[in-house]
Image (cartoon, rainbow, N blue to C red; front, side):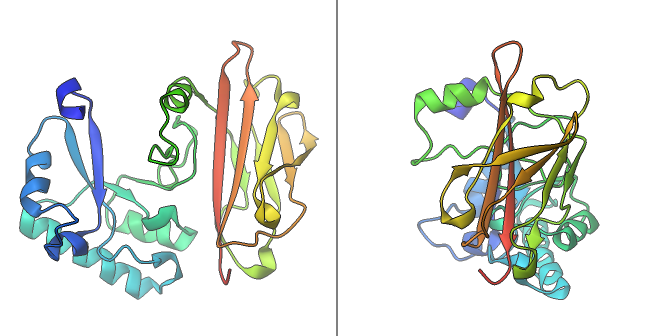
Length: 242
């Protein structure tokens, strides 16, 4: 469908599985076909697709180096775009990805890209067997970005002592109707609406009632703007030890 409609796309994959010749995965010949097309771009997704955020700096670098060797051997190039395995990243992992000369990297938190987003914490919406209905897809296409000036805490990889995190979001003054913002989080093991406190007119605190009980903690905020269109902003935390 993408080829027929000439819709550009990025294919992220970990190279270990392609090397294995597993019939459930693509082959390098199939990857080359996409690489040589006019609409497909190849992106990095590590070598092993393991929980790299829990690994040491040396182990992360060794893993990324292996994937780069595979790309150079099979495609004669190294990709410019990266997608974190499981969407998990930390400040340290981001730094390593930059050192490997990637231009940008995607997490697995939902939202729309705009110029305020960190190029190494870009959001992406899941569209799959669980979240792939046509109605939802059309809603996503019509969702507007939700620009913000700053977010705390900066590091999305937190310890059990930092759980729950103290969330502060500062928005640009151009964002209006901020008093109508709604934020939801899965702290305590289930999704619920969170209380919002205003530090200043465009600076809010999202109050989490409980600790994140799973490895992945998520926060999603939405706002219906003056044009009656939804703005959407998502964040993902990884709790070490959960």
